[in-house]
Amino acid sequence: MEKNVDINVTVNGQSVSRRVSARTNLVDFIRYELELTGSHVGCEHGVCGACTIRVDGNIVRGCLMLAAQVDGANVETIEGVSDGGEISDLQDEFLKRNALQCGFCTPGFLLTAQELLSENPNPSRDQIREFISGNYCRCTGYQAIVDAIETISIQRKPK
Image 1: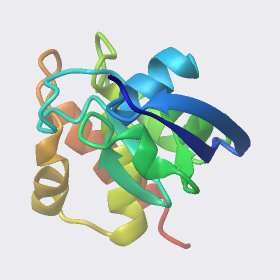
Image 2: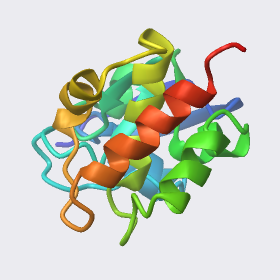
Image 3: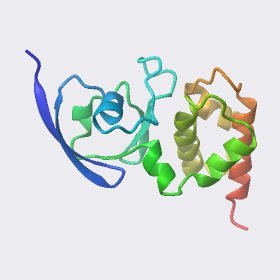
């Protein structure tokens, strides 16, 4: 017998109440219940970063977190962060640098890059590489991604 739980969560600024299976992971809830498809299911083991979502201001792996765990939390998906303009400079630079191709990994990289730049506004290239090391890209390699993040860190510095 499948157990269901009621959750109340804020997703991208909107209050959401749903009854979900206790075993539903967060990324499946976001994608299939709320139809926010920017975060992807990749490895289902928390190592590829495609399922990256922000919960209460911190990035998490949506495939490793249950929807029931976000009851009462503030969840931000790539759609919400993007629509709010918070990462528009990163998005523009990823495009300019060709740091995205198929786009599958891009939402996870963007959320990860934003968290890095929030925690460390002036990271070295090695620090950028280390911070994004939990995100996999099979198309671009990582040079353009590191270049894009480094460029935005420089551009965001107060003048």
